Image (cartoon, rainbow, N blue to C red):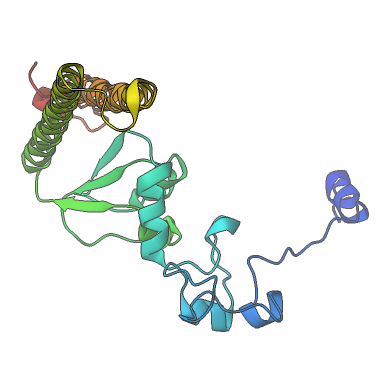
Length: 254
């Protein structure tokens, strides 16, 4: 008979619970007396909440701030605030034993997207439902994956250039309108409000114009910075299968 493991004995004697409850029960139990956030008449109405989860409880393995939220709402929030600017691709040709764990790991590191190259079907058990909150795309070949990636990068660059152009036009229009207003005010008479009122009004108008131009200039700088990031994007491959085509040979040309 083996002697009891000392770590196991110490763990049992520590008083830590052997079972930890995950998630929350039904809304009526966890928030008694509070209006449901899926009730249109509620002052706390929020379209992100799932009525079924509010009824039955939410035992999913998600962050507490996502409790009772729909899967789509969680994905959209991650897209807006939580994902990092990298993507993961994995080939699915001979077996799919590790694809689930790759999806789960990519989700843990908050990858923007996961690409699976090869047959569409793969074993999702290893992903532990994290594929629900991740963008998973399927591709028939490496060449098609890279072509899609290349086109998407080009599209994002075009979008950022359009954003920068629109901001530049806005800044120019504001500056031109303000200069025109100042010229007109300088040629006019005192009018009813007099010199003092005209000076205050002109000063406020100038401050508003400067602020608006500064915002447009900042947007131009953000767009330019994003364009540089996109233009520097590259594919990095870990070629662990002898004879496989190294993915870096498909890297976007500078």
